[in-house]
Image: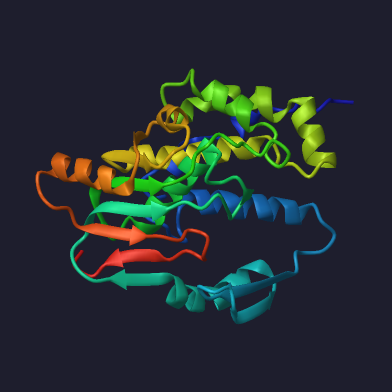
Length: 277
């Protein structure tokens, strides 16, 4: 009997789709979304019945605006018009020079997003993706975050190891060389299967999204970090306060910047477009 040889993880998982031109700004037509759809279709082919999906469109206070059920393609077609009306927001004025965001300690993926440097930078990258059409080509980003080095090892067990590997990389995309090592590590896989931890590959997807901030900004500041060295290790500049970072941004631009502020990332996100773009 012929044996099936499993290809390395690096052959299947790559950050390339996140760094394509079609990934930023956020859209429903990127190569990344096509890959996710293909994964779901392949899973469904191996199942005796198709997926039955129940999905909801939520407002900024997480209240249900609409609930849809059925096969995934039909649910998407039915829900996306309402989701677009809720999510796409035009902001007045010309595109902003500076994006200011507030990064809570706990949101989206769990406890520690504002303290874990990898997740903190992921939040910056995701914010740039969502606000890209309301920003100049290379904005300056200022993120207010505690960044105190609490990785929350129980929920995110492989993140410290991934952070250490990242320090030997020139670019976040270079972490691809470490995927096979960490994503198949028996200890991390055990914690995922039996201890409610995130899968070890999750750290890589977060690092790659953080790299979006590097690709699409002129500079990133983390204001108020308790361990500023961790923020600098992620490629950010640091300042004690948002006001100090704004002063540096003003000096870089040589004029008073146009500022777009998204103070609460813990709420459902909006996709922003400048009215003057």
